[in-house]
Image (tube, rainbow, N blue to C red; front, side, top):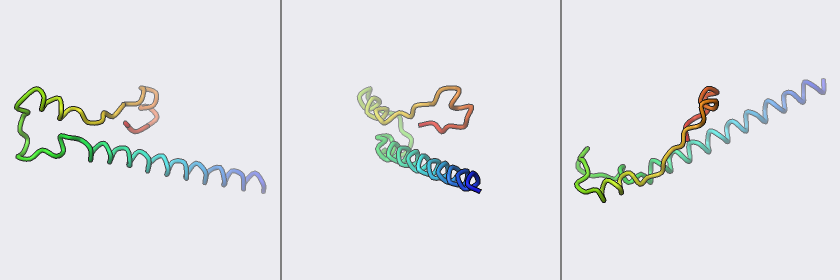
Amino acid sequence: MMATRTNALARFGRHIADFVAEVNYAQRRMLALRTNPDAYRVGGAKAPDTYAEFLFRTSGARLHEPAASGRAQGRPVG
């Protein structure tokens, strides 16, 4: 009886931890998308006119990919 209750609490804790990790990932991803300088372009998909403009557009936050072992376990990029 006690072991069943302990297992249920452990599963519940894992579900809470998974939920918090997913919300954290979504927040980081949304911040990266909102602060991306390329997202505020006006006038369609126009190439940058100068090298300085190219550097500004590519200065947004980069997403780091997990190691191959992490990708195999389904860990999201970021």
